[in-house]
Length: 237
Ligand SMILES: C[S@@+](CC[C@H](N)C(=O)[O-])C[C@H]1O[C@@H](n2cnc3c(N)ncnc32)[C@H](O)[C@@H]1O
Image (cartoon, rainbow, N blue to C red; front, side, top):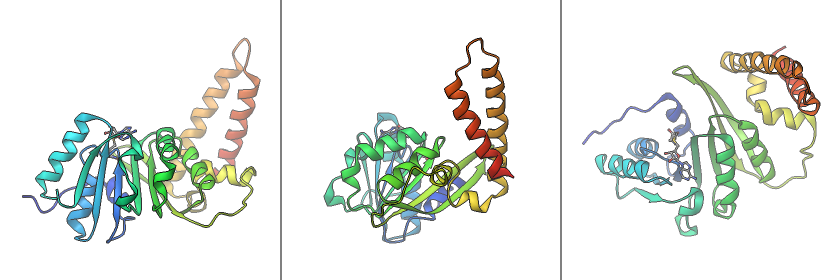
């Protein structure tokens, strides 16, 4: 049996926000690397690895058996949070390595399964905006954010804890900008953050120039994109 395992920098960063006595669910676990790594490190952690597809579900079961963790990690097949029951008393949900819209769909569809969940750790491959909007709408507070680069890819990790409902006005520009850039990331403005948004600025600039050349430009869309470009320039300035 291998006692130790290597884990990507991205999954290690996610794992650093799982508490040492957590019962957590890793939804879309694929090989179940994250739950295995965390359970090998912390003897009191219990985990559920969820997979909707048979191939990854089998791979997850193999990894869990390989590390002899079948008494601490349950591998379940099913869509999103459907695999959870209230008896699981999950305190943390991780959803990583998928598009932001899919993560948000999974969270929204399974909202009642989040009753015991104090922490959601999301790592969207894109459209982090919709996840931050979900957190605001469903009363999770973003307590930390990371932006990391690995193998030429930039990843955002959003850590949110349940909070008391407030009547924050979510229609303001300030809030919308926070959803786009991340309330913490936009304050920190790390080198990776600047790299990501410089690339987005250049891409958006090219798209806008192309759209303006169209015989019948889509003016509503142009205005939306130009507003976004202004926000990006502001955050980079
Ligand atoms: C790219 S992998 C990411 C694996 C791992 N979470 C990571 O971050 O490295 C995405 C996984 O999510 C699974 N998946 C996609 N939609 C899902 C859903 N609705 N419910 C559960 N799993 C899902 C896929 O089968 C795939 O194995």
